[in-house]
Length: 369
Ligand code: SF4
Image 1 (tube, helix red, strand yellow):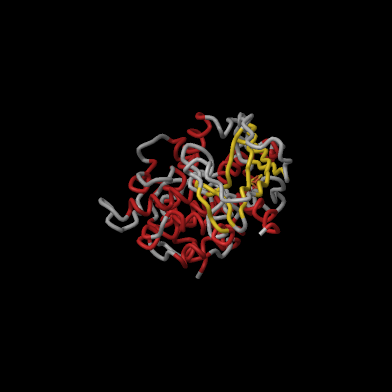
Image 2 (cartoon, rainbow, N blue to C red):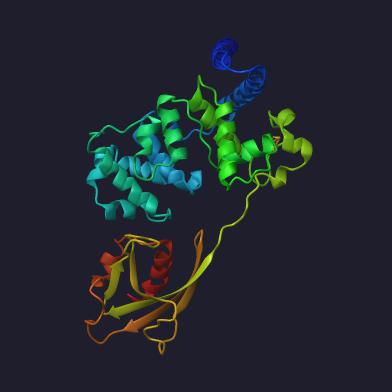
C-alpha cells in the first residue's frame, strides 16, 4: 500500500515539475530532477523520523501561527508547554484579542524576546478588524500584513495550513542547504539570503509544499544538526558536497558582524514594609511593557553610598547588561520618585510580567518580604 502511494505521489510530483520546466531549458530539467530527488528523500525521511508535536496535528492557521511565534529563538522542549498554555487560555484569535497585553506578557514570561508577545497580541487585534473580520488568514500575502509576521513565518503558516507553494528558510534550512551544496556565501548577507531563498524555492515540492517544508526543517533539527550531524546514516550523504569536500564544520558561513553593546544598569529596591516601587518599561528599548524596579543607567547612580547587594550579568543577543541591585529601606513611603513609578505590595508584584533578569532578582529579594 505504501509503495503504491509512493509511486502515485512520485508520478504526480514528476508531472507537475515537467510542466513547470517546459518553459525553460534542458538544464532546468536536469536541475529539477535532482531537486525532486532531494525533496523525495527528505519527505521519506520525515515520514519515518518526525516528532509528534501538537501543532503538527492541526491545519488551523491561528494555532500554527501561535506555535511559530513561540518557537522563534526557543527550543521545542521549552516551547511545547507554552504552546499548550496559549492554546488552552486563548483557543481562538478572538480570545487572544480580548485579553489585555499585560495578561499575554504574563503568560509569555520566561520565553524572552518579549516583542514577540506584544506583536502576537497586536496581530490578534488586527485580525479582529477589517478586512480579516476575525478570520485568521492562511495566504502568504495576507499573512505578511500582520504585525510580527516576516517572510519565514508567513511561508510556514501558508504552506502548513493551506499548502501554498512558498519555501521556508530558517536556521535549519540554511544549514542543510549550505552543507548539501557546500555554499560559501554568508547566510547573514543580502546576497546569501537571496541565494538561499532561490535554492529553497527550486527544491520545493509544488505538490506537497507543507510536508516538504516541515521535512527540511525537521531534517536540520534532528539529522543535520549544528555540531554533530549524523552523516554516517544520512540518506543524503551521497549527494552532500560538504561531506565530500570536508567542509561540514565550516557551513553555514556567517560574516559574524554581530556587535554586542555593554550597558551598566543600576536597580534600586525602594522598600517600605511590604511595599516596593516599580514601573512598566516604556517603548523604544528592551523589554517594552514589562515591569521593573527603580532604575538609572551608566554614570547616574542615585545612592552611591549604599553598597551593591548583588550584581547580575545578563546577556541579550546584541547587549550585555551589567546590573547592580541596591536595597533602600525607607522609614516612610517615598514621594519624590518620578510619576511613572507606583507602589505595589510584594504579593501583587509577583503577578506582574517581568523579564528573566528581574525574575532572578525577585528570587534574591524574596527573603526580605
Ligand atoms: S551528510 Fe551530513 S552534513 Fe551532509 S546533509 Fe547529511 S547530515 Fe548534513
